[in-house]
Image (cartoon, rainbow, N blue to C red; front, top):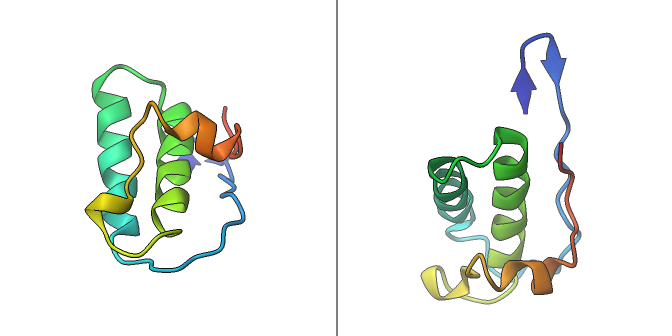
Length: 82
């Protein structure tokens, strides 16, 4: 993530990817959701990275997207946050 004066590396969880179709859409959707609720950009990007990571583990697209409520249990807090 680029910021004034530098950047922050946002690490993704190591997952066994099955189907990457829709991972970008999952990322953008999660990012927009978190930002629209007033979440700090670093936390929003971290959440979006986690959602995209989880979304590639099953086959399919929309059905593979985790809900925000289900995400913490799936990722166990993996991912870099500011």
